[in-house]
Image (cartoon, rainbow, N blue to C red):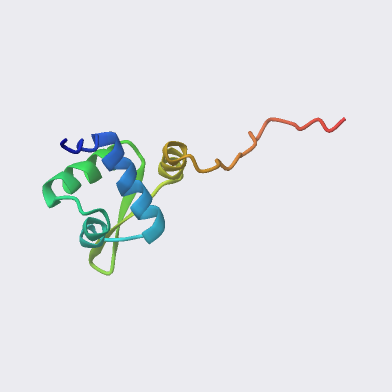
Length: 96
């Protein structure tokens, strides 16, 4: 019986989880952490950046990637980790 390939969504979540653990990292380190091919990883990083799930910055002439708060929430949602609840600025809490 053949093993089923992971979906694109599963691979995107794997990249987000790796970035959460690594904090900020370059493509080579992300590739080593996820075992994904370079061409797919480049495509995925562009997609995740367009969706505002990751951001890239230039640090000491090197491009590093990190998750955005939105990317963290998405990763936690799909991995089943508890979500941090952030109250709305205009909302009030009634304790009575």
